[in-house]
Amino acid sequence: MLYHLLYALHDEVTVFNVFRYITFRTICASLTALLIGFTLGPWVIHKLSEKQIGQYIRKVGPKRHQDKAGTPTMGGVLIILSIMISTLLWVDLRNFYVWVVLMVTAGYFAIGFADDYLKQIKKRNKGLAARDKFLLQVLLAGLAGYLLYRYPLFNTRVTIPFLKTLSPDLGPGYILFAILVIAGTSNAVNLTDGLDGLAIGPVIIASATYMLFAYVAGHIKIAEYLQINHVPGCGELTIICGAMAGAGLGFLWFNAYPAQVFMGDVGSLPLGAVLGAVAVVTKQEILMMIVGGVFLIEAVSVILQVGYFKLTGGQRIFLMSPLHHHFELKGWPEPKVIVRFWIVAIILALVAVSTLKLR
Ligand code: 57M
Image 1 (cartoon, rainbow, N blue to C red):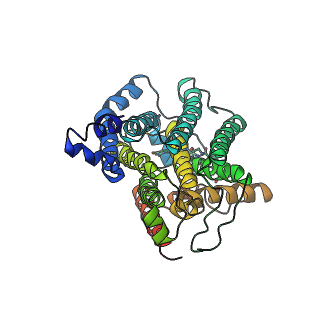
Image 2: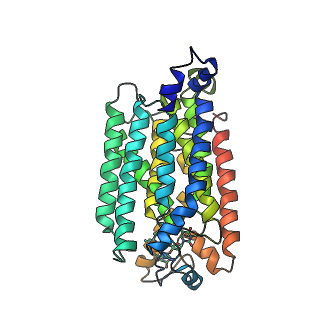
Image 3: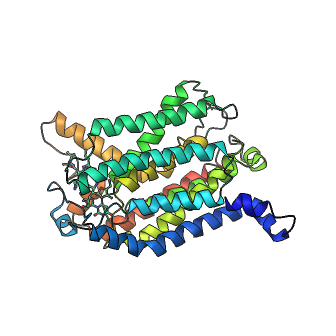
């Protein structure tokens, strides 16, 4: 909105010409989201505590987690509102891709809110039925995939990292592919959010990485030079990624160990979905497996553990899944697990960025 209001005045006020630049508006969006998170954080934590929206700790987890019982949760409401407000202030509201990503954000926010509301407020331990939750996620991701498939300026080719020539066109199959990426990333982030700052750290790192990918994919000259798919108009998603990085940093201030607040499914589900949606629009979908490698490793550890557990009638590959609990039970202090996962996330992000040149 500010973009439209201020840039329109650039003839009268020359300095307002700066608002045409995506880079400048991305910095504004990051700082706006960070400021909202910083300033409203204490109030939100106070309100969550006042309304006794405290985390119930399931018995299955490491015994140490019982000390976390009652930690205010659903702090994700602040993260997502920071992202939405900041994006609507600084983005070009005429951009089709922005509204597709905002639709996914709002939809997954609603799913997570409903789940947390039932679990934390109605004290129904299970929340939304897993099947209903997954069905809603698939429908939303499918709608986003369908809208992109029908959009004339969007092609359904898939980028294969490191390979310049191979870019298969999935046609209508792209809708299923979009579901896999968006719903898959959303649930992987959800599983990762099991230690203080463990999910939001890699979300910030992935947001900063996709900030770069969105910018280069939306810039015709840079896309040509790097020989990557040019997606006209996707540059505006740089601003959403900037807002997500800023909102994430603001939340991390309070979610850092020992956490004063958890994000809840209302935060983890939409954050993962936004990353998935941005990966799809910028046509760096498969690269999400590298950028979001920590999320992928965590999700795969659960799939392997549950599968092996069922196959062998109760034996385990890991001491406990997701993987972060395995290291906890091996005796690593929680902060050590968290920071080491962040280090892995940074390394994977650097590898992913290198693929822009290594083709
Ligand atoms: C998401 N949620 C955390 C918090 C956060 C199929 C099965 C693998 C599913 C999985 C599961 O339930 N995943 C749900 C993980 C929970 O965090 C809440 O959930 C939100 C994110 N969705 O925002 O509100 C707990 O995580 C801890 N936490 C922190 N700091 C944070 O900043 O310490 C979260 C955020 C919180 C708090 O203790 O209560 C979670 O872990 O549930 N199930 C599991 O992940 C369970 N694993 C398991 O059962 N493994 C089995 C196999 C056979 C399935 C095994 O390996 O033997 C874990 N669940 C719990 N504890 N509660 C085991 C450890």
